[in-house]
Each structure stands twice: as structure tokens, then as C-alpha cells.
Length: 364
Image (cartoon, rainbow, N blue to C red):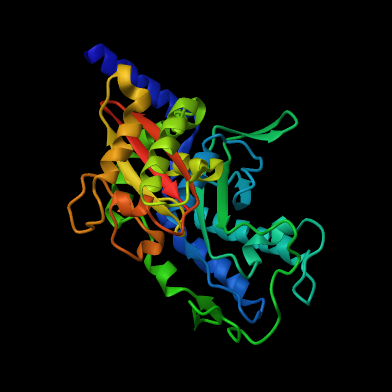
């Protein structure tokens, strides 16, 4: 047994080293927030939102940075990335990176607030961007593409939500700051701040402390998930999951749900063995644990969904695993999330966690 444990520890260490070492982003969160919002404030737009930090996006950025590959992440998030040989003054690196991104954005925006050419670079200044999250990693080598690599750089990745639509050319509307703030916001420092969003920093402080103590192990798990696709569900599991959910919804004449690769990706980004980490703020999330044998593992999630259905509509009962509603606006159980009237899609991920399997399902 001790030999098996030793081999597992060696494998985890090797995986952690392959993706370099992560930097505790909490130390640089304020610098990232203040510098982003400082540049947005200078636009003097009539309804520019104040960005808030999103730990879900920070987690996704951390997964991306594990590859140490300087390339576009995917089409679902806005994104910026930066690398430098600096290893000591990381707050200076953060400010330099955000200034570079701002300069690139300003270069393609005219005085009327419209962009020209590749407007993706204007994501951090788009007035409708609401949240972002970042990750910092020190990579052994960073792949720049075309056979080029750089040794031992510091790699900064930021993801933004929502992504700037491809056909959008208007980045902001010039005018008196805060004169046209959205209804769910109020004017703070000449930017439109959503108090609801600002209150919902999802990762509790104790998790940050736990992260600092166990970052090597967590990095190894993330890298292992990414390389092996361990969070992704098989076609058979997807079939059973969709069938179970729609069987429950048909009982009350609810619209059937469609399987969403997008929500499945989100679930895969945030699923963890030791933390119930939700999907986008605008979505519902259910968490579950599966204790199965190899014989029934494909149908285990199917049976779990029916257990969720047995919870009925009593949201006061104590749950073994959690659930979340959009912006945490309501108390929930797993069944009330599944039966929500305003959802059309679902996506799930399942992650092997030694003696159990973690399940995360997102609905939108």
C-alpha cells in the first residue's frame, strides 16, 4: 500500500511540475480590479459597467494556463494574455500587462466609441463586460507557436464575461458617466456597479487559505483532468443524464432540456473533488456524489437524478450535496433546479475522486 501511495505522489508531483507553479491570485486581485476599472473609467461612457471579480473565470483561466501554451482559449470567453521574464515584482507585471491590453484596445477605438478591425482586443473596455477572472503561472517553458518557446516566463491569463459578440462594433457610448446605467446598477466612481454581483465572490476566504497550503495537489488534479479529459462525460453518460432529466420534466409537462456542449464545458472547468464550485452566475447548478461499482457506473448518474427528483419542492430540507440558483436569488433543492421554468439546456461533468465520483450539472 505504501508503494502505491508513493507512486501516486510521484505522479502528482510530475504533473504539477509539467504545468509549472501557480501563483496565489488573491495577492494580485485588487491590482487587477483597480487597473481594469481605472481604464474603463477614463472612457467617460454613459453606461460603462464596473467590473467585478469572478472566481469561476479565474478557475477556468488557471486550467488554461496549465498548458503553458500562448494561444486562444476558446470562443466562449473574452480573453487577454501576457508573459514576461519578471518573477519578483508581480504587481508591476500585472499593471504593465493591463496597460498593454488597454493600449491595444484604445488603438482600435475611435472617439465615438466604435472599434475597427479586430474588436476582440477591446473586450476589457466594452461597456457590457460585467466580470473577469485571472490566473498567474510560472511556466518551465511557454509555447509561442511556430516552434518558438521561451524559458521560465511568468504567464498571466484573464478571461471576461460576457464575450464581446463578433458583430459588435460599438464598445461604449460617449456621454456623462453613469447617465445611462442599467437598472440593476448604481453609480460608483463614475462606473455602473452591480451590488449583487459585487457581493457574490464565490470562493470563501478559507478556501484561499486551503489553496495556498495545497496548490501543488490542486494543480496536479487540474492538469490531470485537462490531459485526460476526466471531467468530460462519455456519450453513454450524456444519454442517461439527459434522459433522466427529461423523464422528470415530462411528468409535469415541462419543456424537455437539450444537451449543451457549452454548459458541459463550464461544468468541466469548475468541477472539483473537494469543493462545490458553481457555473455562470446566470445559471442553476446541482452537485452530487456517486458511490458506484464498475458494473453500474454508466447508469449511476441516471439513478442519482431520480433521487434528486424525490426531493420534491421542499427547499428547507437538509441536502447531502448542494445546489445554486442564478445569483443565489432563491433557496433551492436539486429538484427545484431541474424543474425551473426558465431553463432550456443542461450540461454536466463527472470527475473520479478516488472513492467516489463528483457530479456537477449546470442548467440555463
